[in-house]
Length: 64
Image (tube, rainbow, N blue to C red; front, side, top):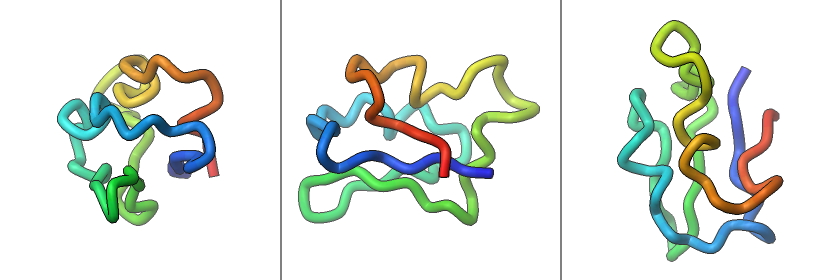
């Protein structure tokens, strides 16, 4: 499974990008996206997904 960033909710703050242990989060044209093929939802690395943990916007980062 993987996550995606809802572009309608994302404020493009960039807090999620540096905390991703798989470097799956990237910026494209000022908006952040998640590479679904490398996103592991932080399984085996952390108890909670790190991007969701730092995101201050509800329903911004969601499961695919």
